Image 1 (cartoon, rainbow, N blue to C red):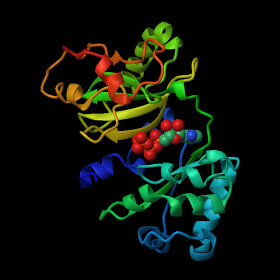
Image 2 (image 1 turned 90 degrees about the vertical axis):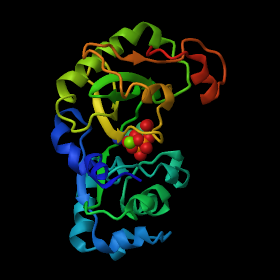
Image 3 (image 1 turned 60 degrees about the vertical axis):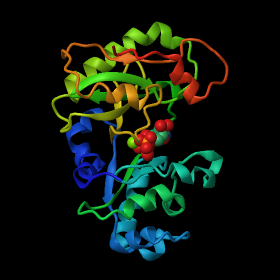
Image 4 (image 1 turned 120 degrees about the vertical axis):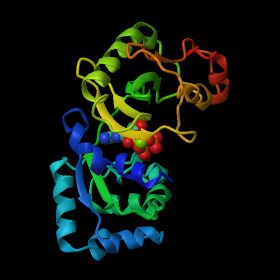
Amino acid sequence: MLESQDLKLFSIHFWYEKFQSVALKTILIEIPPILLQKLQSDESDVNIEEICPHEFVTEVKNAINTLDKNVFVKNNWHAPMDAKMFSFGNQLKVTNLDDLSLFLSASNIISEDFSTQSSIPFYIALKPWKSIHPASEFRCIVVNKVLRGITPRDWPTYYAHFKDEGPVIIETLSNFYKENIADVFPKRHYTFDVIISFPDQPCIIDFGPLNSKTNLYAFSWKEISSLFDKEVPEEVAPIFRYLDSDIGIMSRTDAIYKFANAFT
Ligand SMILES: Nc1ncnc2c1ncn2[C@@H]1O[C@H](COP(=O)(O)OP(=O)(O)OP(=O)(O)O)[C@@H](O)[C@H]1O
Ligand SMILES: [Mg+2]
């Protein structure tokens, strides 16, 4: 798990305020101790309405209504992706308190996060549900405060339009990073996730740590970590790495192997 300073910096309750105007709208609600205890002890059947204080239940219900009963839930750091299989239509969509109870209690990702000793208050983060096209999601890799890599999060999948749109994607994300993130996010090395739906400006989904456990999709940790002690001019353009041909089903390792180190 993250070190305590990183736990704080990558927690949405910490970064959201600073990036509110360029991030997906989020309603943050602090988790009451009784719910925290149940989730920490990995109880499979938690009924939020039965066990939680009335004010919390009302706040959550109001938030779900404000978001038109089409909600995506996370904790401070993660979404309960491992609870997807229990959901209707394999979608982590929250429409009521029962869905929320189910996703939070079925997820090991959530209970593991909540079991870390931390002085940080634990939250649920409720966001409007979006039908996100997989080709519109990117992870951006920042090393020494410079945006160095852009990778599709749907990897390795071939999208023909990346070839034509690549330069626009690079320019859009470089400008977005410089204007909104570079001078504000308080770390030297990190990742940020965005969705792009032209002609709108990119929208921040999340920030995350950059270390050997980070999912770098099209990049390898070896090539990214080699950039840590390299000084580069700030104007260096990031590399957008995508599959440039439809080569059939490819494993992640095969796909990475296909590329030589492009940073040299
Ligand atoms: N508001 C939303 N509505 C619908 N789907 C969403 C929403 N936000 C995220 N998703 C989907 O869920 C996936 C996981 O979301 P997100 O990246 O926020 O979770 P995470 O736990 O931080 O993941 P990671 O551990 O990879 O950083 C996204 O790739 C996206 O496809
Ligand atoms: Mg994340």
